[in-house]
Image (cartoon, rainbow, N blue to C red; front, side, top):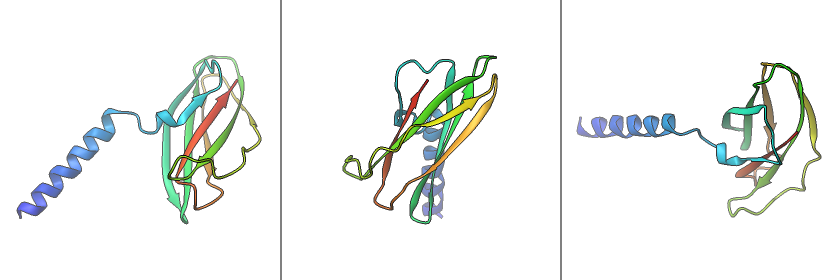
Length: 118
């Protein structure tokens, strides 16, 4: 009974800590001023031993914004494990949210940096 109580307390503490700070925001590297784009959320999951990342962007302006992105995949030691991807151009309409989904090219990738540029 005591073990279950401690487990619940640990889970509650973990959920509170996760809710208080935006996760993975330090993984986004703006290349210059990206306003009016705002990163709303970053979701990370495992898919067949690969990292899957969903980046949710919002255009705070009423005008459409052209931007581009690429992902730099890294191993557990922080070394880049894949060549730089080409920049991928995207358009996000005014006051719109958009989800960008990427999957690691190799199971060796254990971390990432998401580069954004206007």
